[in-house]
Length: 397
Image (cartoon, rainbow, N blue to C red; front, side, top):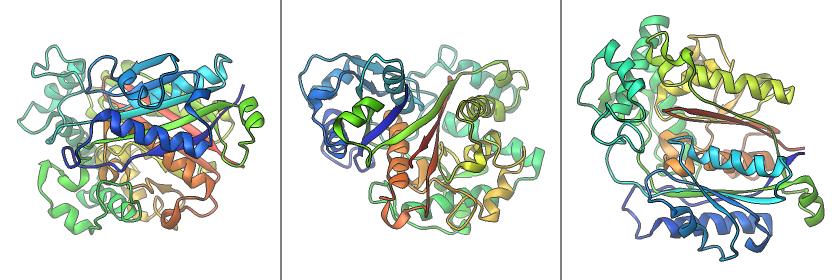
């Protein structure tokens, strides 16, 4: 059975504590927008998976109740930075499995200012952290310093990439410059400032070689998507709005993540590659068929690693690919037209659903000044340490 996204919505992503709102306020705003986009009421929604990382148990119910008190099941989803796409995947499975005809996937996060720690539940003791195995691999090869732990593990992956493949600091900075430039046309982005590669390189160091303008910020925000069956589309006359979820896959860590002792593998390149292979195999499409991509650039190095894992270039070729202009307007693909996590922002529970929202707008031709001309196939990639990688392939027309 096929599944379709017929409505999307999101709030503006904002710096934590910059707006006087609660998580249920932002969830109501995003959910209401998604339902309005679909042209349906909450009374037609049969199930609601809700993603978040930093709020208390049953916060999903508190948020969903703002949309209606209909008694439908609400599921609280937490999969670190891949939480939003996990909620979307649950919605798709409910529909494709024939369990429900209309599901609302909702994600939100109300965060604290400052650097993100080692995971949503890491606490102060990395020995008991869910990502202890990952940080243990990093510490064995690189030690453990005082800089933010997530920046450390990705920064060390960047160092390995530079040493192994000759990737340059300027190529890493080009990712940040590109994504900040893209976000200038996105009113929902946390930042709309444009920077040169030189300005990105000169920004505050976070963990060498990464600077502040190559790192995703903590953010408040919410996003939502209405996922429905083909018969729901027909019954409600939603053909014009519908974007098909052609294929979707989630993978978790295997021995390949840890056996090499490399931070490149620990942060998820093998997971992403496996999820990409599954999606392309299931859909009969390849990366060459994709027009627009929203991928998990939590740090600039992860964008390069994702290029390689998805087959956009050879292993080690990510730096040259971004430098060539192949991943921006006028190139082979447009990657992160929204500004990505680096500039749009990264409220963990909302990120994966915000990626889906951007792709739906792109495939409908409704993205305004950031529209990718002729976009028909879009790919979303969302990853979380601990670990989970979700790749989603969308198509319209």
